[in-house]
Image (cartoon, rainbow, N blue to C red):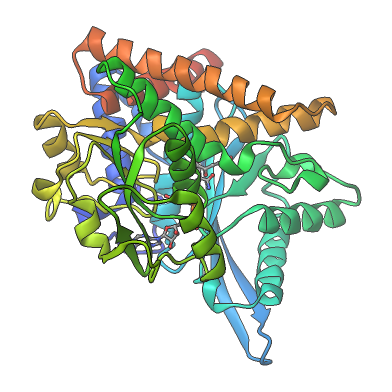
Amino acid sequence: MVSTPVLPLEAASPAHICPFDQACSYLEAAAKELRLAQGIVEILSHPRKVVTVSIPVKLDNGEVRVFAGHRVQHSDILGPYKGGTRYHPAVTLREVSALAMLMTWKCALLGIPYGGGKGGIAIDPKRYSVGELERITRRYTSELIKDIGPSVDIPAPDMGTSAREMAWMMDTYSVNVGHAVPGVVTGKPLSIGGSLGREMATGRGTMIIVREALADQGRSLVGVQVVIQGFGNVGMAAAELLHQAGAKIIAVSTGAGGVFAKEGLDIPALKAYAAANRRSVVGYPQAEPISNADLLTLPCDVLIPAALENQITEENVNQIQAQMVAEAANGPITLEANLSLEARGVTVLPDILANAGGVVVSYLEWVQGLSYLFWDEERVNREMEHLMVQAYRQVTQQSKLRQIPLRLAAYTLGVGRVAQALSDRGLYP
Ligand SMILES: NC(=O)C1=CN([C@@H]2O[C@H](COP(=O)(O)OP(=O)(O)OC[C@H]3O[C@@H](n4cnc5c(N)ncnc54)[C@H](O)[C@@H]3O)[C@@H](O)[C@H]2O)C=CC1
Ligand SMILES: O=C(O)CCC(=O)C(=O)O
């Protein structure tokens, strides 16, 4: 359906795992369900702006390297572009474009006044010193100076970045424009206008959505067996909060491998172990080692992929034994695998709902900053929970009303709101 090649810089990856093609397929499915006009779908199938920059940086050893950085602005129909900044070696323009599109539907679904954007640098941050990462981040920000801003495009952390990178971005932007602009990024340190609760927000949101979905099945979190792939910002927060709520986290993993304990892991102890071991859980003594592949297929009540895209594919979907999969990561299930899980009656809680807690608290951070009024953590968490539960209820109602799976229900809500705004603004001829 996409008629013009808007992402000419790279060849598409194989169709079944190209994240941008997958994102377009979900858009098309929602558009078909909503019977949207062809022109609207055509407009929404293309990112509005695609920026790729070269980032030349002198490394500590004197060598000069050039990294590729991207920022994709998918839609600003509902407000400024909003979305994280990813540092990972597998970052490509097509991946960032897919993630930007997901942000558009996510913000619309949650009812927050943003469009969708995403950024990324193709780099393995673990291989660079703090000084090198700072120089790379500052140069990336300088290159984007005309494209970002508190009412234009507001970056935040994603995989491989954190409050530290957001502080460098905020400082670089502020120095360039000549005055402090805290609202140019969210997920900042508290010292420069960050919000309480942002660090745990994405994992907290996932915990809330899993809790609500279990409650709809007449179950509580207590004693529920959970497996989590990824033990970074999102996976660790989800693990901690689910553990506190009485769930049994039986396995978690990082890129280097995972750990498994049938009776449940001691999450605070594992967190301390990872903090002392370069964020890896490998070698944690109170559990058995397990590979990332085997972890995904463990029998459990809830599987939470919280790392990369395309982890549950046609190859392993038939081995997935979880009764519920909550997508804390963006796009961890391929199109075909998703259909297969849905056909088997597995409850799939889609990314644009299950990981929306992060952008919701980013929004609350932006609102607090703009109003120069900062809230306590209890209020931030309460406001976030309200928006998450409201969106969950809307998705389940839509699913029942239209007799469609939760993912399509979430997409019809997100896409439908953007399409309505597009039409109301008169941008559709
Ligand atoms: N940080 C945020 O606020 C948000 C993040 N997300 C999504 O959540 C996912 C994770 O992001 P973060 O936790 O922020 O990243 P992070 O960089 O803090 O942590 C990533 C974790 O995944 C692990 N990992 C990497 N490759 C892996 C592999 N092949 N197998 C298993 N584990 C692997 C890493 O070791 C690390 O534990 C991403 O898909 C991101 O887009 C979604 C919404 C908001
Ligand atoms: O907090 C934000 O603005 C964006 C978070 C994000 O990148 C995501 O939800 O995928």
